[in-house]
Image (cartoon, rainbow, N blue to C red; front, side):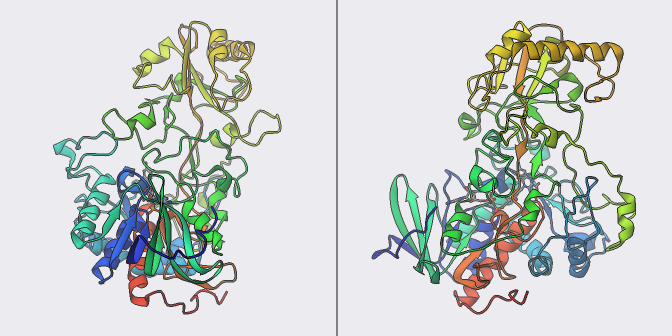
Length: 570
Ligand SMILES: Cc1cc2nc3c(=O)[nH]c(=O)nc-3n(C[C@H](O)[C@H](O)[C@H](O)COP(=O)(O)OP(=O)(O)OC[C@H]3O[C@@H](n4cnc5c(N)ncnc54)[C@H](O)[C@@H]3O)c2cc1C
């Protein structure tokens, strides 16, 4: 994406603050700025608000001594949280550190506003499930105290189904629905102007890489519009992992076949915010955190035979985006029921094997903040299904190619799967069935299967696996005690390719969420938060909401002033 070009002679709309994206960062920033007295326009490229936040589990790790923590006798403080989130000594079982590369200034700003952000959410209609904070659903949220709060799903239609949740669950089940619909209502009530189907395509700055940011260029149904920001533009575009070329800057393996991003097709993470800011001089930050093999950056699919197999998101007919999603997918209860093969029909890892792990309260037990002793509590287990799946077929290409779960009619019965639409996506090339294995291999044709699967390979692989079931020993990849032969037609091949999720690197910001350029200077009038901002390795909502809160407040109070970056002393 290039810059929007020279500032236009006429603006089609204007506001004090222009926010890009209506997800966790953008909606929060918009409300805070509006309630501080600014006029606010939010542009959202999709047909509805919410971004990944509304598809999320609504698990929000806000700690530091929130009212909910105090009510349940949990001791926490901003200082304890800060030391947790910058603890050099915490590593995953594969040796990857969770917090070591966090930017101290950015984490400090986060911990200092957790308590007030929690109160602010409650004051703006978010209802948290009435129970003690726990450790469920978060990752990279620190080890010293339980901090996970859960947004009650409430009565609004869920984006996944188009229907409200069961009334019995509306106060007890967690969902991003219960976070984003109340915030949308609060924003509309406050007078925030939300422009749906308006896609930001560039930023206007006084000079190509100098001066203030003046506004944004937008595409609306093929028409280009210029929207002026009298004080500031806030980027809340949700990250970059949906952009193949962008994500490959940090991991060359992430080629096109990883096309089933978590959160899509409700919204993408297309790097548009990052690219627009880079085009006017912005810097990236904290890029290690994107390659660190922890958390949900990359996940093993939990549903197969569909394009979008992320473990915590299923799309159903009735959802406004079901036509784009294509199918519900087949949830895998037991990986003993399938074998996973690469494009050549070869197994590569024990199907029951794990993905990356996450760090949270009690992940290390006992935990001693900042101590070398913590490493003694980690059993070194570097292997995982994901890296083997992405290793490829040795033909010089970078990505691992499609991974197929292969199984037979008996597995379908055991798992109680339905192998037709809307459960599987045959039309999209994510599911195939045939009466023989050779015919099955022959049928596998879709745009990411760039080499033919040799039928004799798949026959040999299955015959060998069936032998391991008889002997009880998997001599190839040591799947523990292989249980079921693949022998009863029809046979099936279901898409089971790794899923990309979080962005944990992005634009360089300071403590006030002001975007910093390649010379370490503030870009006047430009802010960013959430997954499009770098320097903070934490999954999800809490950092997005907090950074939206900080950015919205600072943008109004500072009015776009360009005082020096507070963190530029490094
Ligand atoms: C299935 C799922 C479950 C999750 N569960 C949890 C959980 O339980 N707890 C947790 O902490 N985190 C969870 N997360 C992660 C969390 O939802 C995200 O980290 C968070 O929403 C990021 O906030 P954001 O504001 O950066 O981006 P988003 O919330 O994704 O918002 C970005 C918005 O910007 C819009 N946009 C992008 N580009 C443009 C453009 N050029 N012009 C206009 N608009 C644009 C997008 O359409 C989108 O609406 C989950 C994510 C998913 C996908």
